[in-house]
Amino acid sequence: MAFRIIILNSPGSARRFLGAVGRFVGHARKLTILPLSFNGFIETRDVAARALETNLAKTSLGRRQSLFPVSIQRSLLALQYNGVRRLMSKSPDAVALVWNGLSGRRLVFAEAARHAGLKRLFAELAPLPGYLTVDPLGINYENSLPRQSRHYHDWAAANPGEGDWRLLAAKLVSRKPRRGKEMVKTATATSPSGNFLFLPLQVPSDTQVTRYGGWIKSMESLIDAAHEASRHLPEGWRLVVKEHPTSRIRFAERILSLSDERFGLDNETDTFELVARSCGVVTLNSSVGLQAFLFDKPVIVIGKAFFGWEPLTHVAPGQDRLNALFAQADGLEIDPGLRGAFMRYLSEYYYIEASLTQSPYLMEAGTAKLRARLPPGLR
Image (tube, rainbow, N blue to C red; front, side, top):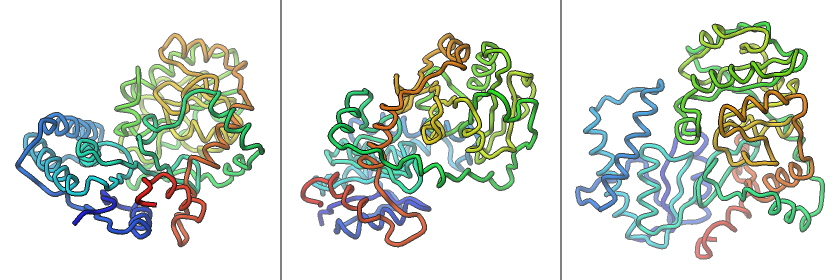
């Protein structure tokens, strides 16, 4: 039997979205356990190696360690790739839908779809509250959003209006600490008063760090780079760092060992209060960087982010540029016209409206947008 859509099932909030898509598309196949096949392809070895690498990176950075030796993990990923690809080859007109990035079995699923010739959709919660990202190319840095000003200015000119995207700031909710991993509450001498930049750390095992960190290879190297850059801040300025609430690995000791009048830790103040009270946000590629747009803050992007291009944000592709941006912290500018066009494009066109707490999960406008992104035969 040929399927119209093949879905890699995921836990949590993804299930409602995947179920909603399956209901209005019809003939959906949800894969909770990936099928296996011993009959391999030319690409099998490479895909299995890349998928294993992402799993090992997570394990080394605090994720739960597998019970199986590396050789067994690699073999299992290879068998899964073979099995999924053979299943997909029976439905060449189907769409493969994967939730939340490319690592482990998700990478296996996505690459099997690509090599089988299926169209793909990648989905996850958007950085803006009440929206989902659904994109045929990928999510985060690999999404299909253009990286040039003209596209957004042209779209805004063709779709005049101010939009109410700034109202989304009131809907932002900071994440709670992971159970058993309470954050150090120390608010150092760099507590949020006066002129300061704010740096929210990220989960070290996240692909945003391991795959899209650019010249930053870890949270430790980000902390060190930020500390060095803080030496260049104008007189009276400081950098406030906050740990990611859900990280299994804590960096408070490292940050506190470097703390002084220009650099320090504040885990106690709410994340978005820190954004609102800051004079700008510094980020590797965290969603907090985009959310800072809602508060009209300048943003410095260090890693690879879909919003990390000038003049939308200030980009630091190396330590020297980061130092220079910190040195001119009191003169960082925002292009309000471009920012407004970009945020309207995201909220009115690109992101898909959804509700995490109500039924139906996909709002009417969101369903219409999603249908438009499906191949004609699936709409």
